Image 1 (cartoon, rainbow, N blue to C red):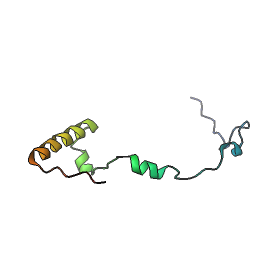
Image 2: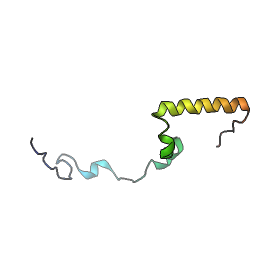
Image 3: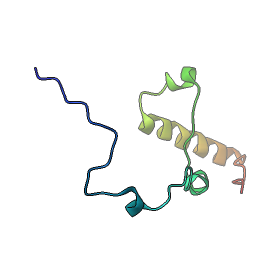
Image 4: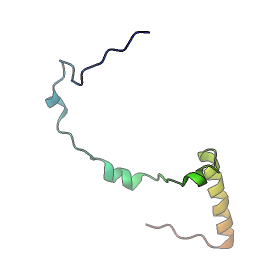
Length: 77
């Protein structure tokens, strides 16, 4: 098997750094925080669910039970 050649961490000759404008770290982080709904669950809870669909099914069932019991909280804004 051939070894892969190591590439230098440089732009190709036809590109100039000035062509790309200034870089801003974290430019979209606020928008991501506002529009994302990622939830991290504890490992022991994650072991109970094999995939995302099973989590969604369980949460839907729990929501129906809560709705019947009249204890569904209003969504926080």
